Image 1 (spheres, rainbow, N blue to C red):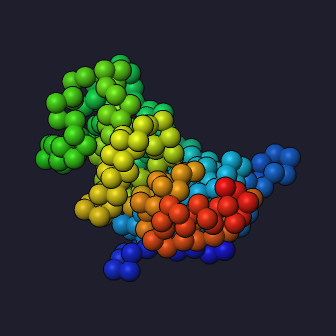
Image 2: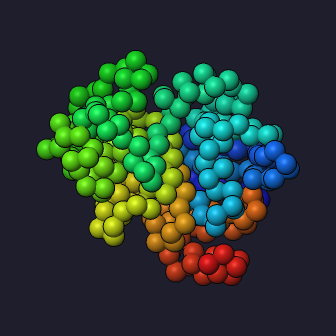
Length: 250
């Protein structure tokens, strides 16, 4: 199934374009099976499916964390298939932001240094005005000198969202970003991701098992056996849950 997720007003090149992407592990296990997927700049796409469906593998190859067995992957118009690890690392630092379930903050660094870490790794400096805006958006203006262990889980994940956005990446990949959070923190993080799309024009691809989380996206794709088997525009949590159950995955 070929899938496109793009706002109708967007005319720029896709933020992500996968064409005929497959990933076959040793032993012949096909984690991805001929997936084509286009995500327009400024779109919010949710990727759903049970364990083993291929959703995490899709994120890993789309973000350059893993290499597909076949197919083409373009990020912000740049072909990444065939790049060596060094060049893929450079591309990730400059064009991709990440939010993980386990936050991924460096315990020994302050929150300010955690947020600006991607820029320092790329040899760049933070734009003071942009950094101030981000910190205010995530509600951590008074916590910048704290270490991660001094913050709640929700505050740490909000810092991780700011870190993902600080380099103004082409795409932010969020892998189960609310999986370790309570209900209030979950709403805060999902609101931040939604606002980054609506107000900043950020492209977000979120992998989640939670229909309520996926309902914040513009479009949701459902995966099974390494393929996209369903697509839902303007998804609601009830509709996504119904479709998962219909597929025997709920």
